[in-house]
Every structure is written in structure tokens, then in C-alpha cells.
Amino acid sequence: MMDNKFTELIKQWLETPSDQRDYSVGALYLLKLSGNQIMYRNVVAQLNRRHDFVDYQIQKYYNFRVQALTHAQVEEMQQKVDVIVAEHISLAANADEHKTGKRIDHDSLPDEIKAKYVENLSILQRMRELHLKLRSLSLDTAPCPDSERYPFLKELIELDKKMHANWEEYDHYVIGTSEEERGTNKPKARTAQKKKSRSS
Image (cartoon, rainbow, N blue to C red; front, side, top):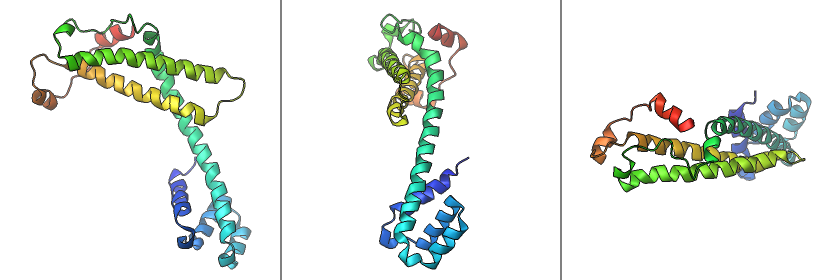
């Protein structure tokens, strides 16, 4: 497994102005990256004349590590999105007609609480659009670069968090309860019945 903390140290070293870099540390980083003892000894023996070489080699290894790290992050995000899609996208297909989960007393709620419900219908539609975009990317003959998938995955995950936050506030709002009282009472977990009705 890649040492992400070491990758961050390399980044900090590269971001240091060249005239302030500690090249003895850079040489040690290069040894750890390459495992090449002979190269390390040669660099240390002529350290003042090997700055460009150390810069180039460390940048090269850093680029490899960042690419691998980004790919791992994108794959992890894809797994989260797969779960989100399985839970919500079937609802998004019919978001305009979707009424499941609407409170019986919906019309008596304050406008800002009713707006949470309406916003979630729009969120579901946007999630469906993002899902279709990701599907089209995966169907292309050429492999889809992580850089293209990342923004769609990121937005979909953020929308899912926003939607859950909206449902929590909408489901647990008590009519006639002041803002202060609502702020001090932690919402109870949603009932299994509500979850079932929303995902049916």
C-alpha cells in the first residue's frame, strides 16, 4: 500500500523554492523512492552539482504516485456512487410524479421546510442526469480517464449528502417548535417504515 504521508512530504519538498530546498533530504527521498543505493551515493558525492537531477527524479516519482493515488480515490468514489445509484436512481426516473415520503401535514409546514422536499425532487433529477453521464462515459470504446469521471462522481456524492440532510430536517420538523428548541433536540432516527416507503 502506498504511503500517502510520504507522498505529502514529497509534495511539500517540491513546493519549497529551489534555493531553499534541503537536497540532502531530497537525496534521501530519492533513495526511498528508487531503492537505488549506487545512485544515492553518486548523488551525495556531488550533491551541489546534482540539484537538477534530484529535482527531475523526485518530480517523476511524485507524478507516478499522485496518479496512482487519484485512481484509488476515484475507484473508492465509484463504489460509493454504485450504492447511491442502487438506492435512489429508480426514484429519480419518476421524480416529477414522486410523492412517496411526503408528510401528511406537508401543507401546514413552514415554507422553508416544504422547500426541502421540493429541492430533493430536483436533486433526484440531477442525480439521474449525472448517473446517465457516467454510464455514457463507461460505454465509450476508449477507457475513461479518472479526471473526467471525478467531477461527476464528486457532485453525485455531494448531492446524496444534501438530500439526506434535507430528509432529516423535513421528516423531524415539529410544527410549532421554535428554532432554539429544534436546535437543542437531536433528530431521532427515521423509522424503517419511512425508509421503506421512500425506496419503494
